[in-house]
Each structure stands twice: as C-alpha cells, then as structure tokens.
Amino acid sequence: METTLAAGKSSPFRQGVQAGVTIAIGYMPIALMFGFLAKTTGLTPAETVLMSVIVFAGASQYIALNLLSIGTGMFEIVLTTFILNIRHFLMSASLNEKAEPDVLWKKALYAFGITDETFSVAAMKEGTVTASYMFGLILMSYGSWVVNSGIGYLVGDSLPQSLQKSMSVALYAMFIGLLVPALKKQRKIILLAGMAAVINSLCMLLLHISKGWSIVIATLASAIAVQCFAKESEAEQDE
Image (cartoon, rainbow, N blue to C red; front, side, top):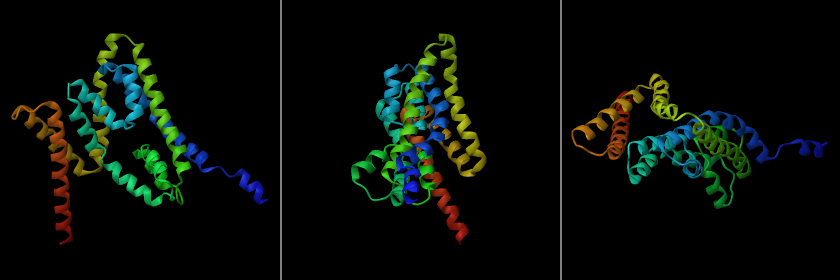
C-alpha cells in the first residue's frame, strides 16, 4: 500500500511543472506582443529572443523597447530597469525563508527565474519549496516567455509594413492598460504616476536633460517622495 502511494505521488519537479502551466498560458499573449513590438522597434530576431533569454522580465523589457525607440543610451536603460526590478531582491529574500536548504548554485540559478507570478505561486504553496519544484515551475514560465517572444517576432514579420509601423502605439496603450487598474486600487499610485510625469516634463523642457536621464530621475525622485509621504501619513495616523 505504501509503495503504491509513493509511486502515485508526483515528484517536486513535476509538481512545479504542473503549477507553471497556468503561468505559461498567461505569459503567452504578453510575450507574443513583446516579440511583435520588438520587430516594430527595430530589433533583430536574435536580439529579441536574446533579450528574453537574458532579462526575463516583462515590464523591464517593454520599458527597454520604449527607451530604445526614443534613442536612450545603454547606461540609462540598464539603470532604469534595475530600479524597476529592485523588488526582486525582496521577493528572493522572502522566498529564501520558505525554501529548503540547498547548495548555493541551485538557489542562485532558480533565483534568476523569480518573477511576480512565479513568486506568488511558490509563496502560496503549502509547506516548503525545493530546488526541483522551482526548476519545474520556472521551466514552464521561462520557456513560454522565450519561445513566444520569438513567435511574436515572426508573426509580426509577416504583417504588412504599414501595419507594423502603426502598431508601435500599442506599446503606449499597454502601459496605460497596466496603469489604469492600479490607479483604481491605490491613491498612492495616482500620486506616483502624476509626480513622475511632472518631474520628467520639467527635466526635459526646463533643464533640457536627455529623455533617458529624465526618466531615471523622475522614477527615482517620485518613488522616494511618495514613500516619504506615505511614511509621514502613517506616523500621523499612529499619533
């Protein structure tokens, strides 16, 4: 009887693969759109797939496309995406508390694949998580993102040039689509977005700072200001 139960129980890797199926499906349309927009931005197929292979961060890759389209320098792009992904340090530290002890190279390897979605699934799993489980989970999400990025590029490449150029506005529409639901949930997001827009405009129009550095300054300044404002509000409520 015990032998039968042990045989019927899925391995941690298989459990991770099963848990990652929904993430893989969810990533599919976003990755397809990324590949398509990468084509309209001027990236080659190799550059598009390589960005997904190396970066593996949806929001950062979309922002990188936007910065590339306006001629931003490499250093500004790297710094902006780094600031955007600082939250991954917190997610990794939090997940490390739930992970079973293992060799450092395994943890470092699957830490690369931690995204908002994989973190949520792993964090909600009952009990601890193993390296095998994380590898299975990340295999599905990572594979879906990379493969569908390439497919999106190829599909976009088959469309007429006039349609490819007109679809470049989809990048801005996507950012608006991501922002609006967040605005409805938290007032702090409204303040953050508005302040970032104002600071970015001031840097470009009055100080004549380049577009790339204006975005970096606006992102940092607005995030710090809003966080300080939030802490002051919490302190006043405690009093």
